[in-house]
Amino acid sequence: MIYTKHTKVLILLVCLVLGFMLAMQLKTQGRQKTIPVQRAEELSERLRSAEKDRERLTVELESLKNGTNAFDKETERLRALAGESALQGKGIRLTIEDSTIKPAIGENKNLYIIHDEDLLRVINELRAAGAEAISINGQRLTANSEVRCAGPTVVVNEVRLAAPFVISAIGNPQTMESSLKIRGGVLENFKYWGINADLEKSDQVIIPAAKRGHNFEFAKAVPKDEETGAKKAEAGEEGKSK
Amino acid sequence: MIYAIIGLIIGIVAGIYAPGYIPKEYAAMFSGALMAGLDTAFGGLRAALEGAYDNTIFLSGFLANILLAMFFCYAGVLLGIDFYMVVILVLGMRIFQNLAIIRRLLLKK
Image (cartoon, rainbow over all chains, first blue to last red):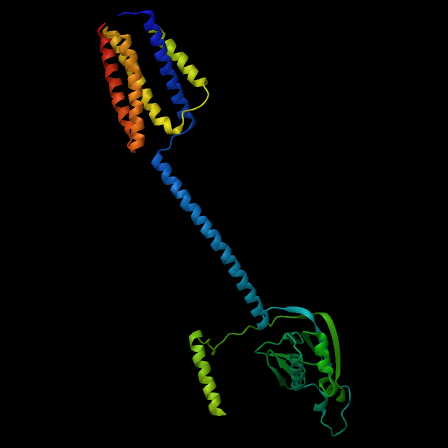
């Protein structure tokens, strides 16, 4: 074995380089936990697809939210139309009481009390004047509501009502008032018979919701594609009957 | 022998305190080079114990092995084959062989 000065220096240098490399490798390994390349690629691929999914779902969610908004609005409108929700707004309140005039002997006293027909005339007049919602003594008038004579009382929505009647209507107060007060109109007729009618305009008329719901027992919706056919058939029948 | 240990210690300390890290792309190549260096060092030790040590052979072996290992690893990266595995495997086997011979030589003494 020849140990020269060169050898010592050489060994020192080589070992120095080796130690340096070793330390670098250790440091690097300690810093970054090396993930196998394949695994990393797989993960990044999954991340990418997940991000894509997320974007797509965000868009979908947005459109669905808008959809439900429109749906809710439509439902609300239909509920108001069907009388399933209470409404408020500008309108009038008409209070009608039985006549205070005593009928002359032999005269029909039925002429001096309020009948279902009187109420129907008022309602008809209000609807013609553009009333959007009407109630009688808190009974909301819906598409199925009846106004019917029942002895001394009137039945609305299967509820017996007696005088005084309070008819509330939401709509243009001016129009409704003038259509009721028109010469030869409903209120003038009432006045003739001594029936007290008190008309009051209000900025805050509240019409309650109809208390009974209605289910269709016999009626069924016609499918959309058959509707045109049904219309044609109807038109034909009408033509025949004429 | 003393010089080798001193050199190692200085190198490790320098490596720990040196700034920067090995970039990820070169990690495979670097590990190959490290194995080559270790292999040469053990080869040198074995040669010294056998009495056949030669400065030139040692130095040239050190440099050539490292360069060759790095080249292999680089080629592997280019070709998309994990050549560095092969390099590390072969060099590791050689290190074990050298160690076995060194052990026997030391036991014989």
